[in-house]
Image (cartoon, rainbow, N blue to C red; front, side, top):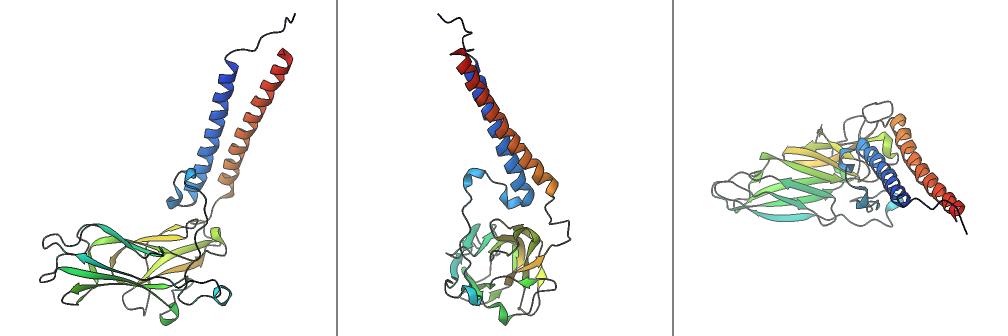
Length: 263
């Protein structure tokens, strides 16, 4: 007849709780790491880690010519309200390399016009001025044009800022590269815009108040603390995740040993 101590009935519950807390701590650590890298990466880890699609070049580098697909353009007819102008909407090409989000009234009422045509056209950057040093143009140049119907007049200024998002080619050194959206009314010179750069998604986002030509400028951030990722926080997050895994392992191992002794 065994006189050993019977297992404590609350132990499995405490073990499960501790494991859950450890897993939660790991999730929070990884989420904090992704959020510290880029604002656009602040989303649940369950969204997945699928790689971005291959960039579509107007004129691809020789090494990518055999696998390149031509980029797509977009054409959209936008109705105008006589009082408020255009409605709020997002317009994008089917390859998702450019999107433009309009707030209500971004295109104001146009006397005598009932609609406008928005076109998004990819172009070869070799046709345009070089990016301001030390940047270089990464990917295609996109022309964003709005013309009235039936007057066929070009609208160059927006009544409300629009949100422009450009997809760019994968950088060679992801965490030492900065991307900035460049704007130009005629392609003869570029103005950098305040940009949110999501390197993991290869997306650059900026607010625009005028239309014309847009591109992504790429530059190195070597020696720039503004875009660098400090190694200290990374090691902290890794240590937190490792500690959580170690706690789970020790709790499981301890429970098994107690179970064998009690048996």
